[in-house]
Length: 200
Length: 188
Image (cartoon, rainbow over all chains, first blue to last red; front, side):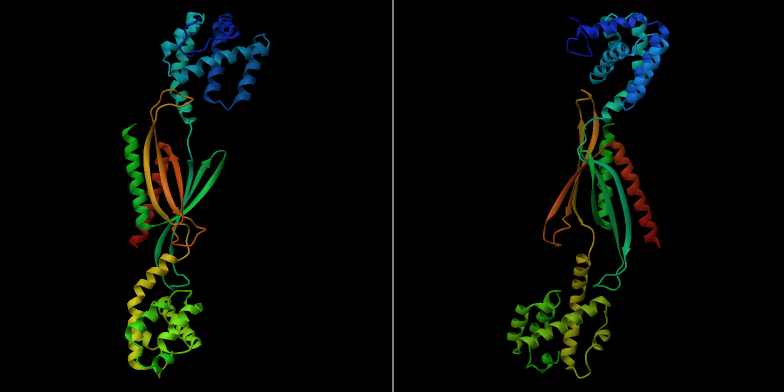
C-alpha cells in the first residue's frame, strides 16, 4: 500500500494508474495540463471553462476527451488533499514520486503548487462555515425636526440596516441608535478590531 | 376648568395629581379616572371627564409649543379664571414639562432601538475544507427592541452576526465616515 501524505485512504487502482499515465505526456503537454488544472483550482466556479479547455487539449493532442477528464479528476485529488492537510512543496513532490510520476514532472507540479498555495489556501478559508455572516451595512442619519407631540425637536438619530446571510437567503435587520449609542458601538468595534489584529 | 375654581378649596396636591393623571394619551377616555376625579372634587363624572380633557389639552399644548415662561401659559386661561388657581396650575405644568418632554421624545416613533450590544473574537482552527488554520473572526450580538411590541414592554429580539476581518474593517470605515459627518454637522 502506498504511503501518501495527501490522503489516508487507499487509492483505487484506476487513480494510481492515472497518475502513472502522466508520464506519457511530454514536458510541454504536462505544463499545459498543469496550467489548466491550476486555473480551475483558482476559480472553482469555472467548471465549464475547465471542461472546455480539456476538450481543446484532447483535440490538439489526438486523444479522447473522456479518459482525459477522468485522469484530471484523479489528479485533482492531490491538490484538494494537500490543501486540506496544509502540505508543503516537498511533501507534494514526495507524494507524486511515490505515485510513480517522473522526477521532472513532480518537480514542476510541486513548484506550481508552492506558487499558487497562498491564493488557494485563502480560497479554502473563505469557504469555511460562517454563521449569520454580515454581508452589507447601510446607514443613514438625520435630525428629527418635529413630532406630533413636540413641534420643535432637534435630535440626531442614526439608522442602520444590516444585511445578514441566513443559509441561502438574506435577512435585513433595521435599528436605530442614539448618538451616545453610536459612539459606544464605534468604540466597541474598534476594540474588536484591535483584538483581531493581535492575532494576525 | 371653571369647575375647579368653583370648588371649595381642592388641595394643592389634588390639583398636582390631577394634572399628572390627565397627561397620558389615554386619560381623556378613561372612565375610571373620571370617576375617581369626580369623587375627589365632588362633581359629576361627566364634569370630571371634561375637566380631565381640558387639562390634557392644556398640558399637550404647552408641550407642543414648548412654552417655558409662565406668562406664555397664563394667557391661555380665560380672563375670569381664579388667579391663584391659574398660577398654581401654571407652576405645576412647568414643573412637569421636562419630564413630559423626555417622555414624548423617548416614545416617538422610530425604528427598533438598539438596547444592548456585545462582541467576541474567536479563532477558527479547523474546518472541513482546511484541517489546520488560524483565522480570527468576530461575533457581534445585538439586542434590539421588538418593533411589533409596545415600547417599553420589554420584548427584545436578538441577532448575532459574524464578521470576517475584512468585513469588520469595511464596517469601521463606514462608521468612521459617519463619525466624521457627525462632527461636521455638530460643528455648524
